[in-house]
Image 1 (cartoon, rainbow, N blue to C red):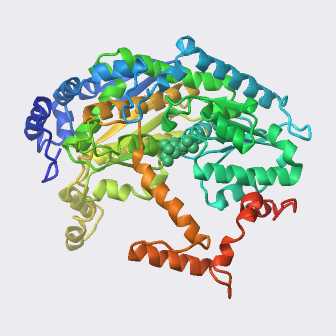
Image 2 (image 1 turned 90 degrees about the horizontal axis):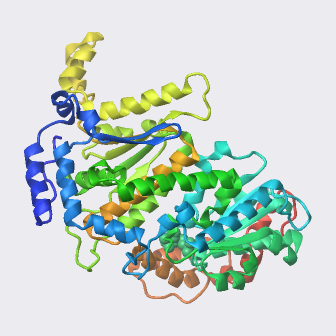
Image 3 (image 1 turned 135 degrees about the vertical axis):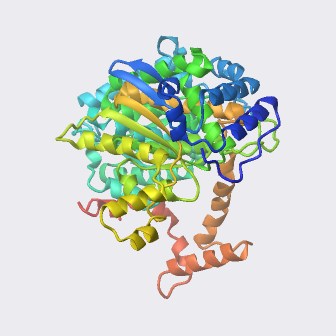
Length: 580
Ligand code: F6P
């Protein structure tokens, strides 16, 4: 690749030093030249796994690397003790050292080998989801459930929301899943609008059951429900998914209606647990089990395949090369499948909350650049938005194209058009177009010479921008499970090489604490010391929110009314049944 002028310094261990030498040797070689030099490049740098519908393929050949690069990266992984760390994860050891607990999500999808407590909860999910889907679980007035509202945030939202979207073709029109996460009242108000309390089931999903946003939204939802149906209705309309039975009970949900999981399930790795209850209800328990089975296929492959034949390992190694060795700061995830629209948001948490770390397990500054900034949108939408920067911006962005051969909605030539765009974008990013080519093209179309020369630099593309393609035959529960487990294990492999803990998230704490301190000030409490900007902004927010002609303090006095009535009245204003 035409590497950037200033490349990152690499750590000084033998494997990193070998990679630094290799990087220097490759410098200046364009990816397109590597294809020209090696007709076997695609075959050498792509791997696949069989599925019931055809191969699940990972193509790394459009990255700025060679088979030798992967060899050296595999040596780096070995130097970092990857094999031992993988074994420790599969053995359920406490690899999340800062929180002294295992990260044992693979046990959730281990099938017959799953621990008894996992099987027991799965059986309860099977029974409950079947009862809801059959209309046997009835609301307080005897009606069947038509709408399920999962209230949760982060891992208690993104995983199930993304999967329910991805598998919507397997769902039913008469049983809808909704997801409320943001503490912004607009989210719950807009969701409840149009729902019928008599046929709505809330799933309050929170590993800790202490998360501010979730408890606030759940309290509002309860106020909406009891405002219509009375307190006694809570038992038929609220279930909880949590590890914290005491807090569930304190909230007012009978623990008989609680689906448990365990501290060894990290929030962003939890969709495979009872956190997936909304998935099982929306698409059926069989499909949920197929999702788990797909993940298990990838788990077993990850555990058993040699590093260079191992999809998660090589995907991770290519990422380390791009981000740590070539200094590429960002990763765009580009699913060419509208049903995977929430995948980039889900992967943002998975990658950035897991590996957005600056210290090693030992507490020392980490020596190489860690997780990239991850963003994305489904294709082709992104093409009409941020792809400009991907093609012509001053810094390269690594891209993951997720390409799906078959749509669940094969209409006319939509799918070939979608696929053509996916394949063309990856090719264009790599190939680019020189100013001379741009000029010649314009001249051929009759553009005057001076104009062609003036525009040529603007219409040139540097190319040589690396991308990875993941090709799926179709989005099914099985292939989706494989895809998600692929990324989970990729993240783990990268953490092992970077020497960081992928399973804690202390970085989210400070802002939460400080929000807790500012909240009373916004509700009429005494001002506290802040920097000049924050103090001024608090003052302005209070002034903007004060009722006209009233002091700041008035707004904060309505605490009870807000908590109990919430925006239920607003949400409900359509049918006039709310408490306002
Ligand atoms: O704020 C970060 C976080 O702890 C995530 O890791 C987690 O997925 C989310 O909050 C929600 O946590 P909980 O499931 O405990 O409500």
